Image: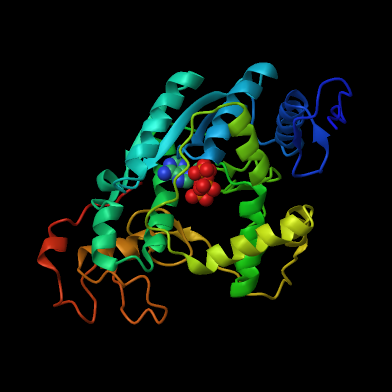
Amino acid sequence: MVRNCELCLERRAALRRPKTAQKICRECFYTAFETEVHEIIIKYQLFKEGERVAIAASGGKDSTVLAHVLTELNKRHSYGLDLFLLSIDEGITGYRDDSLETVKRNEVQYGIPLKIVSYKDLYGWSMDEIVGEIGLKNNCTFCGVFRRQALDRGAAMMKAQKLATGHNADDMAETVLLNLLRGDIARLSRCTAIVTGEDGALPRCKPFKYAYEKEIVMYAYFKKLDYFSTECIYSPNAYRGFVREFIKDLESIRPRAILDIIKSGESFRIIPTTKMPVQGNCERCGYISSQRLCKACVLLEGLNRGLPRLGISKAQSFQVSSDGNNDKRKNVVHERSKSRLVQHNIK
Ligand SMILES: Nc1ncnc2c1ncn2[C@@H]1O[C@H](COP(=O)(O)OP(=O)(O)OP(=O)(O)O)[C@@H](O)[C@H]1O
């Protein structure tokens, strides 16, 4: 039996909404989804009028829907935002080159400018080259650390005042559980924040913090948005993948589980005596860091010296010096890598 939409009671129901299990029509789904994002933007004051906002755009479903929805809401509610797309080209042949083609089309479709920044230009290394050195295991560490800085640096080049990413509720729940499983209390206490880095140069926000991945996919599908859906060819992160599957299983039994995990994460309070990292700046590049050198500089130094595991090994058995020459194994310098040493300075 065909039922009418539970919200408008007029049009035919076309889908069951993953978040609420309501049977609704497409139009009511679009309205509900967009209204919820707008309400989150207003409630948490994610943007200020006139702000220049970089939308971190990978070409994937989340950031494509984010670019579409932010462009729409900016017009509809007169936010007065100066939006642009910011993409990082990690240099992954057969993956990022294809997804960047999607972002280039999005630039035309949404009528907002696009800036592309590459790892090769910033660090002297593409991910294809890094994987050639380190192999598949651990390559995500390089990619994650480098991307974080690359987004900040790209946004700074474009004089952005804020960065918006497409992290969704499933990503948030996954991060809460991962930090819990790793016993990473410092990260657990801050990973659910909807805005981070407010004390630094560039605050980041997550307008989709409460949006379900399934709804984002549905939105993109019904709106026929142009996005790229292939998984990264270098992502063998089994532990994260297991947590992801676990959350999907929980969601299938009880959809609210995702929001409840986020709520639990938000409720964690760190007892005041817990030793927390003190934020300072990297001695070499100036980027925010709780260590003398930021993680990107340590990883980069390892690559450039032919010791790619330098910043990966848990024991941190190698001392990294501020001039990069003090290592116990300083004689083991890879000539090819040495020639690539790139000044990595963001000051
Ligand atoms: N290469 C990139 N360039 C710009 N932004 C990126 C890039 N990779 C990731 N991001 C940003 O970080 C967010 C989370 O990235 P993640 O790698 O978890 O991908 P995801 O959850 O599949 O998101 P998406 O569907 O947007 O690719 C993305 O939504 C996007 O805003």
